[in-house]
Image 1 (cartoon, rainbow, N blue to C red):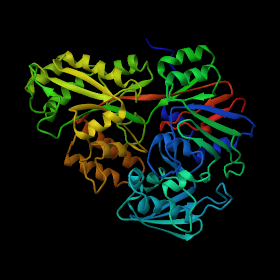
Image 2: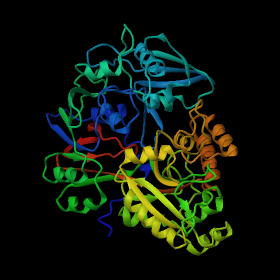
Image 3: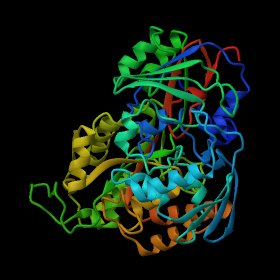
Image 4: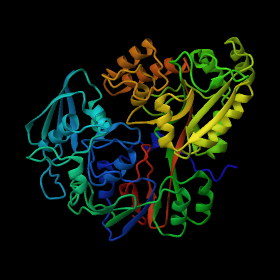
Length: 534
């Protein structure tokens, strides 16, 4: 049954309401300082104190209190000033970034261009995998220099119109005169030093992350004197902690608990995550494991036929998943990012399942009796993941495809998927822009160019590759968004994957917090919580 439905806030209305990081600090700066402490129950477990070690949402979310970026992103994911107040493109390969004056690190040292040079160079030249996630953001940089202490000049190897967006992923560290700090050094250091609105106090791995207010923050005095993040991985335990007032904020609230929280007088906020969850088909191999005819005999890979992929898409009831499994806290998906974000297409729509047409198309492809297939996915990593596989199996049974859902802990599932053990599987993608997921999931795999990093299905389409490359060469703006939307429409017509839904991020809070602005990137921060009465 559907619980109490909170109104989904359109991205357009959030456009100027929230920017993670520095701009959020500006919002807080307008609030008078208080002596309140904020207690947060989070599902995010801090993995390291090195802000450049691995590009993980849980680490980035927590360390964003301490470190800042040159460029932030608003609720539309569009670039906004951060530690850089402005930037301009001098030529196809040359950029100039003007840095914010009066910024100091937590140890009192001034923020200058040398810190930017150090941070970018550390990622590009020093760190080794699994830091590769960050290296992809800096790989285009040929050189970075400082014409003066508050100006950074960056030259790229090739035309890189999205450089500001790439820099929205990179935290700035204070430079060292005696070489780059290793990850081990940072993890063993007394405390990490950044320019952010909160100072690091202490950290107990997997348990708690404590912060204190940075009274010298350039954006004004942060609202909360102290902040404590308690890692509570169980959703039920997070809800219980919020219900008993053991914490003031709890993230990743299950949709089924929203009604009960509201009945107890607690507030719940949500917005659609800038991500998609989908089924990905193996289209690369002639034969795929886990696919047989109805008698159990192996058959050739049916997913190499577009008509099969289209039939299965037509037979999948995505509105049911959004309304019944996610209880309305999700949006049925027709593409990789929720509609309204830059680069998405308004022309792609989700339609109700048409089982008769799907069965006819399957027969036309040579499978009048369907086939058997293993349908794999993680268990409990994303809202509704396991239940969604069960629902899809029931949908597909109506056209003769007997799907066997197989779920496993994410680490096990991911390992098996990478080994090629599955013919079709559940996946998810998020990033700083729709172009990231288009390139990672659907571009032809190319290690040197960093394309196709999540293209486990080995889908290749040279015409789409060309359209995507052309779109990526256009600077941020309406023309680039239109080109990305056109590329999305083109590739979705080939059904290389089956978009399922964009789940909503749900955060609950008690009376101490007057409002909490959920950001589509899914970070949980003290900067998003405004004290009651302010």
